[in-house]
Length: 169
Image (cartoon, rainbow, N blue to C red; front, side, top):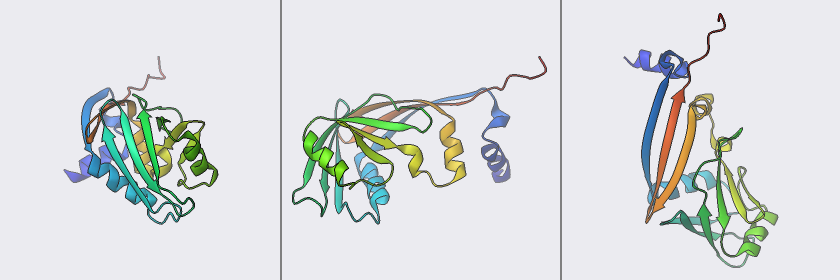
């Protein structure tokens, strides 16, 4: 059974052409903070980062860095959908401390894959994927809608293995 599942996954679900999956994935705040800690491991520029998930796509981030004498308390508003361009990106608008956020960008405190563009944080999800399998699976995602409630992010995900058009017609 495992060999069959592995073959289907390794084949990028090509044996299941026409597959469409719609899923609602509730991600608790503690798991998001564990992911952030994992991403920041080894980053000398950030000594502490904790996200608090709020309703209406709002996130509060407490960030400490040895490069600045104060703790950055950032308030962000997440865009409601994932940007599924060449590499999927989460975009969030900085609602306060715009100057401090820009200083953080100037001092390059954020790890690769996270940048500030004006007053917008951009998190390139593709830059955090390590294996070719992870990148292949990410390619199956066709849409992601983002909603938050207190302490939780809810992702509405659409996954699709498209049918390839026959070249003989």
